[in-house]
Image (cartoon, rainbow, N blue to C red; front, side, top):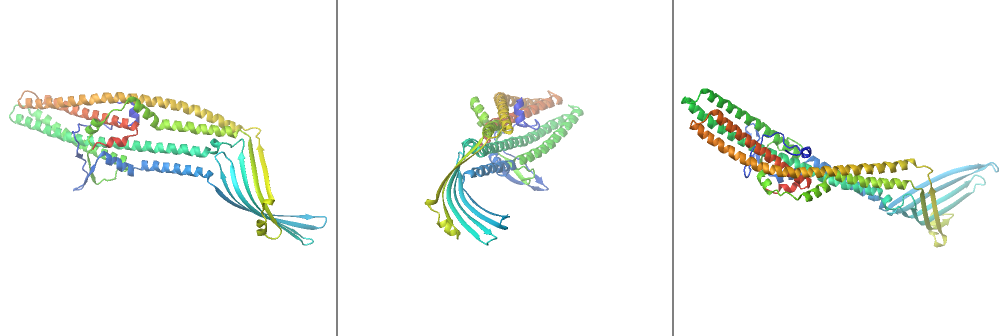
Length: 505
């Protein structure tokens, strides 16, 4: 039987009523609306994959999700793009003097324009132009003082403790990069899963169509036995009860055909659901499925165990997710440890000023190297306690340990699943060969028994027993082939190579 873990990955089959495919399968599912036959459309496995890649909403959803992650990364990279800032302020305040019974009003409008850019170490370089007017109005004796000041200066600010370094500065960018990497892997994983479902449902429908053909052949075979029995009854060589038994068997065969036709429609709907997410899609079309299951089985070359093990470990979405989490939590740990540091900011400013008591333009023209200035600055913030940052350090450290344990467990699960998959592949390959031999022998036995019935050397019951054995052998062979083809799909699924399986045409 198929391993337990493999059953969790896939739905192996809805039932075991499947039958032997021809060497090259070319069967159609005919959907009839009223008396109008549906349009016939060739559908190979590769074409089914192409339709799913184009229309399946799951694939489209995760493609949008990937695009959003790309845009988020570009947004975070914007911190290194030069920024232009323009700010303006206006202050007005007044005071009254008791000595001279007068008051003064001061107005200080100011405008600053700057272009600034951050570097990867957290430092910010800015080129600035500022202009300011100081206007003082006295009530007595009615005087007014004006002063216009303009400046051009270059300023650099650098965190020296907290916030310094590439890891801290690129914290949000690195997080977005990890999110984008995982979004890409999630897109590929879900695309691969959709194609796997299309693959599984394609062959499930294909073999159900073949089962219907076999069921109709069995119905014809049963009719032939019925005709022989009827002739013998008319010649009074067999009792009428044998004829009644054969009539009952014919009714059973007719019911089986009705059942399989209903199942075939359900399998057709399931294939449409896997491709388009919609059972109504292409309802008026008669799909002719042309990819042979025998050809796929024949072309399958079992990969090396170590090769597929390595691929499965590197491509498993859970393992990728745990690796992604580890890197993200390590970033959080580094950021939390950085937040524990005192905040020390150093700055240097170099510029030139201009002054005038009449016009702003004159103050701008007065800017001269002779009026240069160099200013060194700094600020220090030292928290007495920082329990929140300490808690974040402990939380990040604990999450790292948890994820490492989860990743180790998942690695072991994947390895066990690969070992089980290889055991199942070997087992079902042998089972298919044995099932084909049993089916061939069962057909020969039934043909021989029918000849004996004609020659009155056996009974109707014995003939029906041989027919039942033949039917069981046929169904078991196709059930085994479906198991095997799905295991082949699982092998491609682990390697993220579902599209390659559609090469046989």
